[in-house]
Image (cartoon, rainbow, N blue to C red; front, side, top):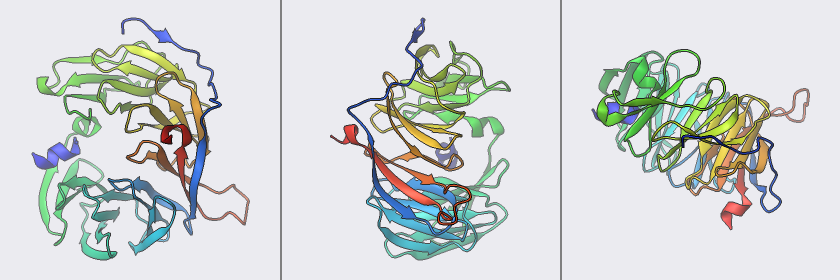
Length: 326
């Protein structure tokens, strides 16, 4: 059950203007830019306390970078890693590519274990500090001992369970049911019998993300970036119209801001209450745009402009929202 647990870890529309409003009192500041020495293949991902990030490149290197942009360590996975995962306490980092996973001790960069198996497609997370969870690309998940690399457990997880996204408090969950981008929220305690759809928007839902307090869900729809009340699925507010299709949405730790990654290559920060646009950064849409734990630093990967020989490598950008830090 521990393995399964880690895998699953109003009546009217108050419609605000969908025209982005640019705040004059806040902006996005660049903290640091790090040349990755190649194209990024995984990351960026913050460690639990927000003091470091990890990013992988097509050359098989994994760069561990401090929050102020200093390269603390370079690990050699061998081939290009496609997924990374920090242990819950941040003492170890798992790096995976098809058929291989390695576990590293962050303090000295030592390789602790290497797992070579067809069961490894991506690293998905951890069971406590001592076991790493991988996915085989279909419906099988396995946990491995961190230090010995020994297979500990293996479970079949249905497609429905894989799609289920639990709320932070573990009391509710949402999943995309069937075709057409329809999302349903249900009570975990009722085994899915007490459920309600997300309503009040136009068109399919492209992405959803839980607020930190589990009270709201943000998503991308034909109406724009919107927020629903999680308790009844009713649309509460329309925040912002993105410039292109939304690839990802993430709340910051305090629930005050949303980071929206779009296909045209931007990561935009908006106010989660009224949709005010705080600022934006260039960002590769195929990789993540992620908040640090403090709720005001975030990181993206910037892809170079095409046909620019002086910009052949990706860059890791560490940024902050100035207003949130004051």
